Image (tube, rainbow, N blue to C red):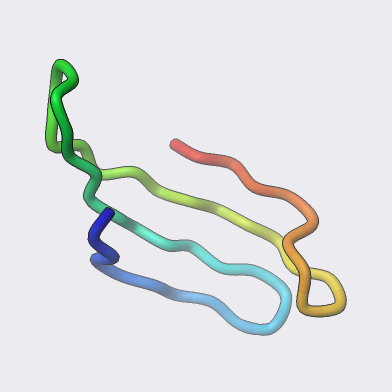
Length: 47
């Protein structure tokens, strides 16, 4: 996984990353949307 971009603050963040391997469609750009609480991930959605 290669990190491409990160935007966020102490409550939420969006990370875009490139993943590659021996699967159809490789490489893919995935977007990780997460919410933080007390410096821990409380929710994570991957698009």
